[in-house]
Length: 558
Image (cartoon, rainbow, N blue to C red):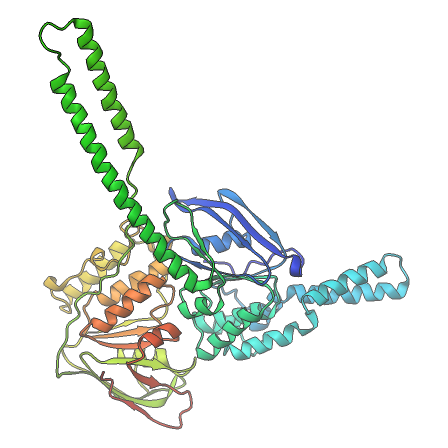
């Protein structure tokens, strides 16, 4: 589990701040995770880091922050760092206020140094003026007097808990995440290192985060699957997916520049591969011809001397060797095929009402009564601010939560599956074993017929090298891929997706979106992902409101 935060011990540097990485490489478990990574982050620069799940994006942030030492390469840091990781530890007894104090320690120390040095001025000590000027400069650099106000403003705009006496252990994962993010945004660090910062944010929080990152004077390094955030914020993109020269790709022009540059690079790579294949074929033919001459042509005609025969044979042998060396020197480097998600065939029951919720509420979580009906092919997007009850509604529809009022009815033959917002705790078993056990239980319980079983490999969600790893060794994105595989394994008639793009790569999000459009199953989607909402612009909408003053009814048909 990641630590609560890693904070640089350096002083704020303002325009002199610098964060550079040169030739970073690291291996884990005999596998190269990062190789040849170089980047230079300056004040006002905003880097986006992209790549498939498991490419080492979070690992790179840990190295930049100093929490992890690389095997090769160097990192140079001048200035202060604020780091928001995907996970947050909860220390027993720690409160929201404690978290604020931890993140604002630089501001607290700067003001304390200023007070101490001011007292020194009154004593007339010779060094007092110099100390006071240094303390004042540090406090002004981070605007220490305004730090608490900035945190309070961020807490409010992110929809986070503002009561500083609240224990963190009482908060949900999303609530803790928003508190921590608000503390970082208010701390005025020289650099922000953010790992999937849009998870757990609603529309208002996303707008505030986007504005803050665009307007701040410090540098930003952003690992994100959120295409809208990358488009709005990133000025430079570092791509950790494989490239022709084996080094990470760096693209200017923001996210649009990355998309176009990556496409052009893959096309050049494929063209070079085809050219190499043609050269490979030619060299193979030359080698075959030389070998034939060696077999049939080395013996001169009758009457030729022994010395001449040996000389001629040696020349043919050398020609064969030269061509073989040429062939080996032109080794073909094929672009590695990326993982490609394959949506399974999900069943449809035309004309059957698969699921209906009548005036359902859950006390303290879904106060506004909801009525909806779903048939095969239904497409429904559930929206609303944090706390409106989106996750609770999906849990009700999956029959994992009982309603306080109202009723949920599911057709007798309908299979309903929920992809929850958070992954279960990682275990020591491998992804393959977890998936097989899950499918085996469904077959044993009669939920799924043997002929309808899916294999994990058939879905294209995890690379063959990763399926046998223990879950706890997988990245959060890879664990999320397994969660999706488990949800699809039962071939559900109704698929409920709660923030399905969290932690997933950009390519997989695009493929999943296409798969959801084509499936015959009913799909209910709760998401704050702005690009996904745009892509599902023709789906029916259910906008939840935390206020219990009205009822919401939706048919859920396309």
